[in-house]
Image (cartoon, rainbow, N blue to C red; front, top):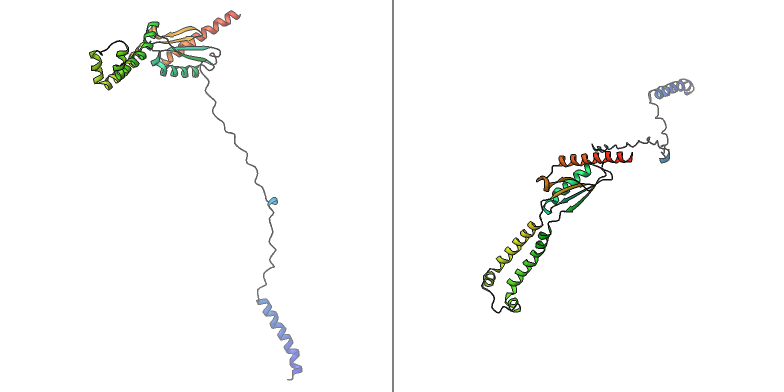
Length: 224
């Protein structure tokens, strides 16, 4: 068989082999899509979150309401009762909102006040005599200092310390009165000098509430 006869037979056979090879080969991957660029202004914005309102517990109202508005409480106390006076002031302001509290020292009697003013002068005099008595006595017309001066001079530091401590104690005693007088609108509500004891917080609060209630009733009766 010559070449002219082989060509019609070989060409169909070659095409058949090519088709079989194409069927057995996997298909090529699909073409890749170009990357999508996200624009910031086109991004999905999350919904706004509502802010929660913080609720604070309301202040507990006073049991006596606002009956203290326009009233004045005056507390006159001794020098050693200053801490108790401050404590009572805070209690009254919390129990009676709007009330005004005034603090002052209860003055001692006039003789005690005069003597208490002389105590520091005496202290300074003793200090001066101990430190410079040899110059002070001749100026006072005493040529020879007395014997007690030399006794004090021998222990000058002990004498100065004792004079300082005793003088301060005496001055505190003279200025102390033991008073704790409470007035509501110039009307006596409690007196430590009369009762002989210090008032309790509940006792003083109830006394002020009673005075305030009676004054409100009196004012309303007068206005009507």
